[in-house]
Image 1 (tube, rainbow over the protein chains, first blue to last red):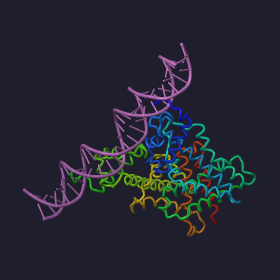
Image 2 (cartoon, each protein chain N blue to C red; image 1 turned 180 degrees about the vertical axis):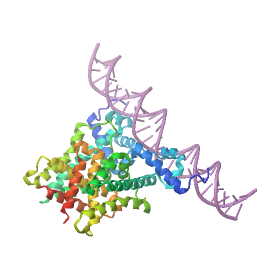
Image 3 (spheres, each protein chain N blue to C red; image 1 turned 90 degrees about the vertical axis):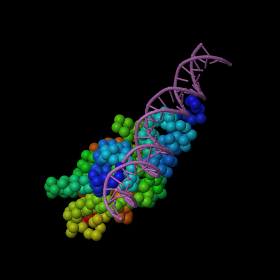
Image 4 (tube, rainbow over the protein chains, first blue to last red; image 1 turned 45 degrees about the vertical axis):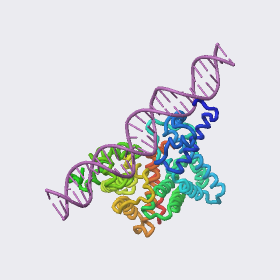
Length: 196
Length: 196
DNA sequence: TTTATAATTGAACAGTGTATAATTATGCTT
DNA sequence: AAGCATAATTATACACTGTTCAATTATAAA
């Protein structure tokens, strides 16, 4: 048809991301289909290319959206947390991944083709999570940390991520690991204690 | 045709895994194609299903083969290592991943469908790497470690893996992290120092 | 030499992402 | 208000994908 008034460009973006997110949660990245997303949104495939340029960019947008939800999830966990906010963060990281394994895995399984870049807003969504962690890390470091704290916080995230990644991908199951959350928390504690 | 004498069943397996490995190194998991592997091996698609049962099982076999190469790579690094064997392991982990990003990523990006299981030999290939690390961790722990050492060693691997995963997937690039290897090594050192 | 068996193929099927020509609804101009 | 230019949307086409399966063919056993 032609330009429709029922959805603006931004509404279309949001619609495709929402439907795509739902499909990703159901099927995972390997069985993700642009045609199926379009069908659910009530549009044809071509519209995805009109709005996002490529399927890769739609998936990138879906994944950036996941970061948004994830950050909100962690903020809520922190609100209802007691004194041990570091534990809340670590457990929150795992909890989100385990509750949304396909959505979470898609973030790390998908890679943009060379040359393709992330938009500014998408980038900011992804960095937000780091900021949350950095704040909490600063709070438990003597003197509120130093200039190296951002790097240190990123490194702690990577540490937890490694444990979580092994858990979700099944590597830990092969190694008969029973308590990866506990291990991750132990490592984080040890590294935090070493900063002084 | 019929049963051919030019390749035994095991030779066929090895042939497909070798050609598949090469294709994976070139294209990565997302652009991997069973038909292309078959073509390179000089057989038709159907033979893959005759030998492996499904494409997923071929990919699993390719990934298990990667573990074999990876373990050998680490053993060589350890041979030419000086006193700091832990550093050699951490740097070796990263080096292999960075030299073979597509092959390495395929290990973690691919997940077997529910119900499908890994064969015994394949499983042993994957566990071998853990054993290498465990030995080296024991060597630097006071009293050669204890009953918790296997778990601790796996946790250290996960820690390094997290940093490496962020590096290869591009997450660290987004966060403008410059020295993930150094960070990983720092964390490992801190955790090792805490065990006493 | 014949027969039975197992390996291999090639075609079919229902999907996929991407490109593009054709169509259609809208906003602007006259 | 009518017509036109523009941009959105669709439908179709293309070359691919994984998977299944009947037909074919080479081998081992009888």
